[in-house]
Image 1 (cartoon, rainbow, N blue to C red):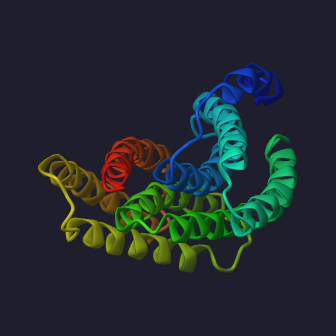
Image 2: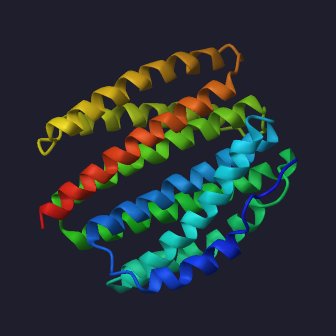
Length: 261
């Protein structure tokens, strides 16, 4: 049975008091938080499709609930941080889309309404991308670009899994295969870019090696989809494992950016 484990409104009530007491976030953390909104836009759509395709439903419901709470926590922190009109405008546009997206994401998954859900996910992704770019420009920190790039890799793990699930559900969207292939290609370009970064520490290089090894395993699963032999549970599990590794990588780049100020 589909259910949300913890009402986001309850969690937000608990968060409201604590967030007001926190110190303002740094530019590097703001890039990371805004980049996290990109990832969560795709993770929520992935969770919706997991439930619709009966793929690890309990996990999907738990992730959906925590993702919604994380988006709203990030939005509060970024609202408090916003240092200029461009960033405030980007936050406002994303907030309008989020209100619609959240409402639809909390309904029972249905193939008929999945197209609208994916459309809202795309819009929120684009608006979150615009927000990241605004914050990166404001920061003027070269290392913040690595936080952005690593954060985008984090998003792509969830986007790839989301598009894979959409294809396995045979949703009537014309661009699914094209978008899936584009996301896979972008992930590989991103790995190459991060591997070449002169700022990388030994620890970061080791993390990148582990991510590359796991990515090669994921690619083997993607090849089955070309013959319409889908393995959604494998892809979901692998994408989440990649996400955890890249989350740590992004935090390391955030620390690097913070020390470069």
